[in-house]
Length: 617
Image 1 (cartoon, rainbow, N blue to C red):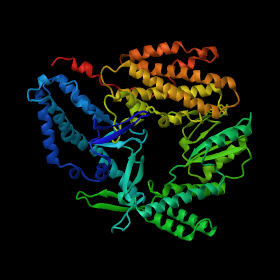
Image 2: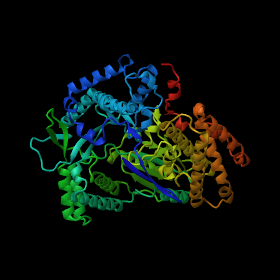
Image 3: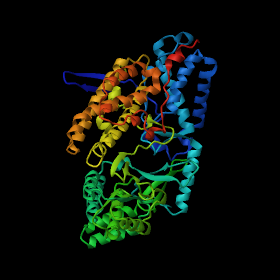
Image 4: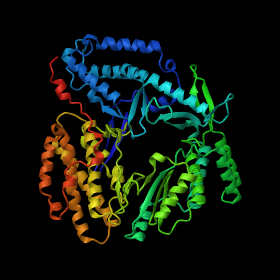
């Protein structure tokens, strides 16, 4: 049972809620332990065969469901389990709503069906899915999962480990060392058949998470990051301030830029290179000798568990391919090494230039074209860059992509870069469910409002996009409109996630009005703090933002007219009362369709129980 307290201005009421049914077959902790085990260790063959026979008996001749319509409703729940995202749940009421109990001859009480249905899903359906498929996190989305056949996954994992040992990235150890960093996890990047495309990450031991050594490592990592930021002139923070300053200094001059990505930044830093750099810093008195010795001992003993035998005995190896991703010190040491390279090579440019780095991505901008050529030559000679990701304003039509932003070099404006792969779903980008903080079934408005809170989505409305310091007012409106389309898509995904019959349109329109007022008020405050002295813009911007919010929701909700029919009518009434954009001579054509940045985003299907339940038994 989970206790959740609602805090309100007038009163506080405490309610006990346990209405969520998790769609996860197994929890994350158990999954981590089982990644290296064989199929027989994870699930006994006799146990799974017995469960499969029980499932066949249940589904055969509708003995359990009594009718085809009841079985289809049950299949809808199974489909949700298969197509789920991480942490996804459903309300427990979906386990018994819509069923025709008169067709079930074996059922004595309707209340017993909930218990039996939950038992079938938890004890039979989920273990069978978990036996034959491996749910792997999709690195291209926040909460997406890929269901991979278990045998293909173990084959991929085995081939990757063999390649690691063959390429001397991993050295198997015959004896068990005293210090083991954790379990080596392999994340698939592209295709299950592409053995070269993967990302190795260590999952740290739980025992060391709260220990004194972990606290000491965090303190060392913080000191290393501070030292790395002071070593060179490359900027690593406060990009908005740096870009505003650069735009002000360059004025109306033409600018040239390039973006470079360092390939395999962690793997290219060998233990020998890192040790030499630490010795150099100790000699320069930039680091204490004891700290340098401790770090060298830490990176030399990168011991991990990479596989398990059939009896559950772990295979331990030493990581030899640079720094191990997932370790506490690896990210800080990578920044230190790259900062040392910047100090040596990225110098001698003219005065009007901007050099910024985010982890292993470089952004260089200058008014001198010769400096751009020099930067490109240095990166190709002294850095191992990814040629496929290299960008130049000369080649890429004055448009650069860096750190989630789109830079228009001709006008020096910035827009948000929305990344959606073809066929991706909005529910894989967001987290709607929280088992520790559940929302009652009757509070649909609270469920939707939580996902649309401004702090959860403020990145798309940050001062980087809502400003007139280097953006024009038309670009600000474009950025706000794209952000509100994203919010409308998230609103639709939240309604579909908690879908139920006969949703009152008044409830949805009240939520939408609350969202409009909240986002418009916040964006007005951001614009006033980051705007030039233009009083007309400040006066009209609230009406403009409200108008664009209505248009964005209209375009998105029209894709589900059967669900939002009454809500769309009320939005049309609101739209007619706001005509300020036409009076201010702002082009309306670009706001009459969903922007192209969302064209690859797929509108998720919504299971309509009403149609299923109306069918005859």
